[in-house]
Length: 285
Image (cartoon, rainbow, N blue to C red; front, side, top):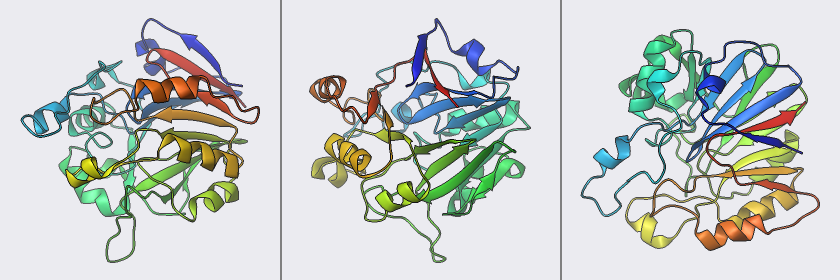
């Protein structure tokens, strides 16, 4: 079972350079698909969107990207980031106004990005010397305790280059005996259940904003629907589900009724967490 603790601010958590006990993993939700994860002396960010870049990019468009929640921390405040994992190049996952200051202020930090998107990552402000390309099923060893295996993500569709290298990824984190999956942006696809079983994933971080033709016709690719997420958990070894990709943009979130459904959903084999800002979630290893 995952423990949770409310804090006044996550700044101390994010900027604590001391070793965390190697018997626990700690997560905080950054909003949208973003998480920060601490284990030992490593701080890993996943898909951080800590600016208001998209409200400017889409001002006057059919879907104004106005934030519904304030960033829990400013990217300029981050000083001890070891790794940033970007699942794909959409700007709420590889945000130029987030990654640029992190790259500048954390020269030791490494950015894990899909292999076909290296050039785009550099355009967004990441120093090329800090980029580690990610390719499907090619495991990346961060240190003796943490490994990452990229797998495909289907963001309405797969996106590949001529070498069949994927631009949309999910990441499987191997942290001692715990296996976590961050989906990136994805919908179900035929091989996904088998992949998660093959890697013995037991904790999944997955989107719940769904998809529909109206959003897709207007350039907004969708994600898992809640019943699809629950079905995937039933089919695999997943015991803990942490949902994400809600509460950021009014046009692209789960509804109040859907969140209430999840809050009241009971399955003895599945723990469901709807994360909140300024909470620390602890997984014992």
